[in-house]
Length: 196
Image (cartoon, rainbow, N blue to C red; front, side, top):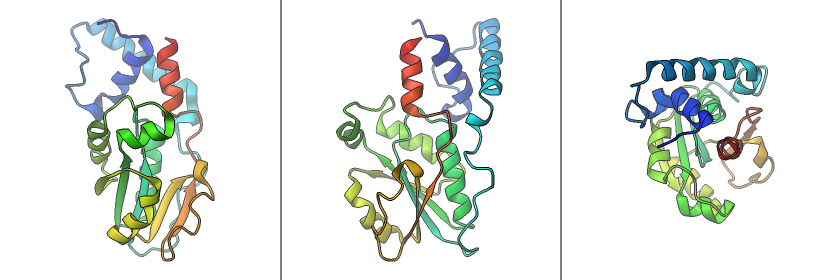
């Protein structure tokens, strides 16, 4: 199977997330080494696009432990996904971070295409993050109030691309819209892979 360079570099970078059985074999040490070096170089060139989108660390509303809820598709898991999970966990102040992952069908209804990774794979990837305490499937936007009640969430954290969309969705749950990580998105990664 021929694999394009960008996808190969992406998989090399994500090997710690996906594990050793990611399909990449290290039979060609030269190719593996070159891919790692090129991927590292690409990260250095991108610079702040792979860092936090804000200059300051996330500041919680208060220091009491709380249950925080966030949602996403988390396809082609990347640094932007990791950043929102990390920031949401910081806002939990030692409490729980619970994540709703969009099902394949829900994603298709929203974007007219299925995610690259199946829902079971995306859930396992998100579950593997040290910031996440629990993961469930989201099948519709209208479910958010139900999940807030079910998990007793005091805080809903979403990317600022949703700013204002869910204001007032629940009477006892505060909402924070966090800045997205600049320069990276699953849609952009998919476009770059297709162009290679």
